[in-house]
Image (cartoon, rainbow, N blue to C red; front, side, top):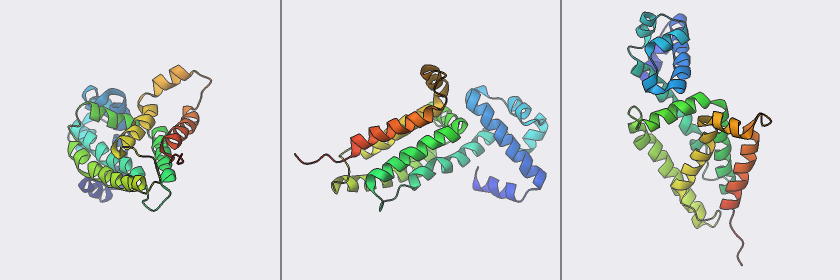
Length: 213
């Protein structure tokens, strides 16, 4: 949600704040299931238990609701990478980032699908954030990773593609949850436990410095 929208909500009555939260929760469910193009204001209003005119009192359009969700999501999406510390143990800092991203997929699958749908459509509403704050943060962490490589603390890898691979390997479990569970079968009730072990092993083997011959 934008800062202006947050200020408006904070200054609103308890009922207005409750209805705003209800609308955003309903919209998250609808958008994550149908994407922006497939979702309608009527579907969101029905999911929120509000009339369409009442919903439009809070948000003037479907796009306004979508933008509010994406604005709030971007901050949530950046936090795990912000937490990667330059002064920590390099391998553990990267593995910690992997764990946080996987935990986000477990806890926020609808948000992950909302984000993925926006990207697939060309990021018409969050393009500036991707080339702005996201790119800035990734570039900053890439400098840190390059220094770790130069210091011999981790193997030589392309920092940007390392981060891309972490995104791909963790967000897959949210964006393709149905496929993951179908292939694993009913005996694997929680794929995230095995996924965590697998990803930690994968990145540990890839990044751990090899002993000199």
